[in-house]
Length: 353
Image 1 (spheres, rainbow, N blue to C red):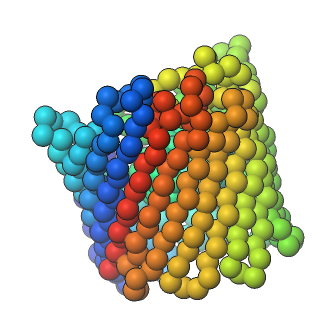
Image 2: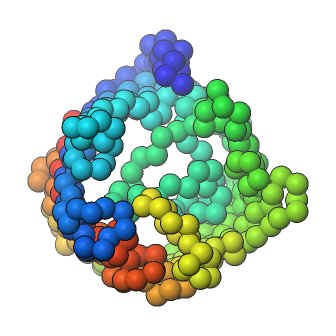
């Protein structure tokens, strides 16, 4: 997929408008662990991730090219360490696609990301689910795909897509999603094949009538049809005086474990249980400051993960964030200090130019 950009870029040179922007971000993380932590014998670990990015956009009246490339430099005890000195580098082409918009709809071809359903961490229609609690809003790497939306009478549309995370390893995905939107409400159906033995058939809905709401129901079936389970998510959001923002909801996964002893156990495995609740509150007093807290509650074992944060906007395009990742439980629970450490402190400095 590294050659996608060289194939599409010549088309971008025909554009009437070209913009080049960049970003630089540094995440410094310190994890404090209990002596009994399962995944490390170190009481304190330091990791640093320096990320640089370049975004190229070129467009005319009908066509648009978008490319996003990133370079990463890792240093520390565990993050990205592939050599004895705890340092490594990586380069990724996150997105590189052509998009054509006409009166009928929009055609996308290249390395892109397709949004199906309502989106969000618990979206049951996600093609590949990936959770990084220290970076929930991070731009995810796209897939090689082709998609087409067809609009009809300004009230409905049809999305059709197909692609593969790795064209050299046969693992295709495809889907079709007819949807509607009118009077502040949106919704639709989804029928898709996300990966081997994971086929979706479901419905989603969202709207805003003073308070926002969203909900999804999905039935997952195996390729042979001899195995199935249901997923559901529902939530609401509300804002007060354009300064306070609240979001709360719940998630159900019929295939999730109802006993902590049955959880998938690894340092990067999360959301293995059957029931979850989530909550967030954000306070934005002015254009220079944002404070908030998020909570993920495992309703099966009662453990909670708290993520308080504060962000200050130092100047145009420059911000600094202090974030804490705090498991609250101990013992054999999902968000346990005995597994992941007592706390992780992250300092993020990000600049865009």
